Image (cartoon, rainbow, N blue to C red):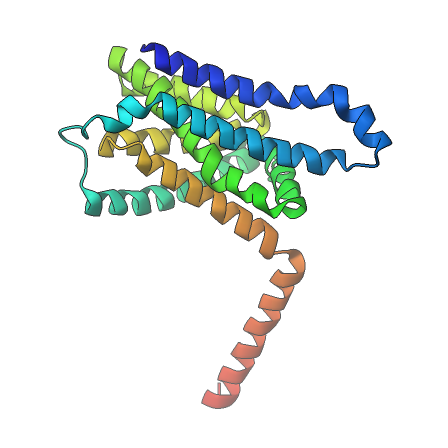
Amino acid sequence: MPARYWFVILTYIVMQLSAFLLVPFVPWMREQNLDVVTISYWWSLITFLLAVIIVCFMLRKDMRTPAMRNATGPGMTIVWIIIGFFGAYAGQIIAGLIETYAFGITQGSENTSSILDAVREVPAFVLIVVVFAPILEEIIFRKILFGEIYKRTNFFVAVLISALVFGAVHGDFLHLLQYFVMGVVFAALYVQTKRIIVPIITHGLMNLMVVIIQLYLTPERMEELERMQKQLENMQMIIFGG
């Protein structure tokens, strides 16, 4: 594996551990009546941005390399992004049903809840969810980890290892199956299109959809939508004499 790939992985690990640098300053921040949680969110935003910049700089050679001979064109790239989005969404639903009915795992992820709390507190945090994290994770787990294992073994071994690591890194072991399914879909997109931008965009769209649904489709809004639906049904009955 090229040395630059190891530096990319190291950058990701350092970025993930960088939050510990704030720990010695927590007592001082509390003495100054500073919001430690909000500061930690902004710290994450800054470190993610720096990590993306560093990783893109390290991979500038890869970016200058002409596209693979069999890589999809712009039109099919868009088609595969759409297919991947709906495929990942369907896979996540199926995985969720299996978790619920086969293993008795209740739906609702602590990882997702903590991310949504951060977005509510610092709206700019959504950039991590939709842009920075998909870029870093797809480069590391698909381009590097999956790609290097795939060269030496086969698709099934590579996707099994990379998808399991992808799920484990998120630390949400109860819902490991859902992360695994997502990892399989993203790896398949990368192999099919030979363009890492495809799983990056698909990953970002999936995260964006989750944020929108969780933030805006609250129980109160769901009840309001149900009331509106009933009103429309009543209007149809009056108009058409049903």
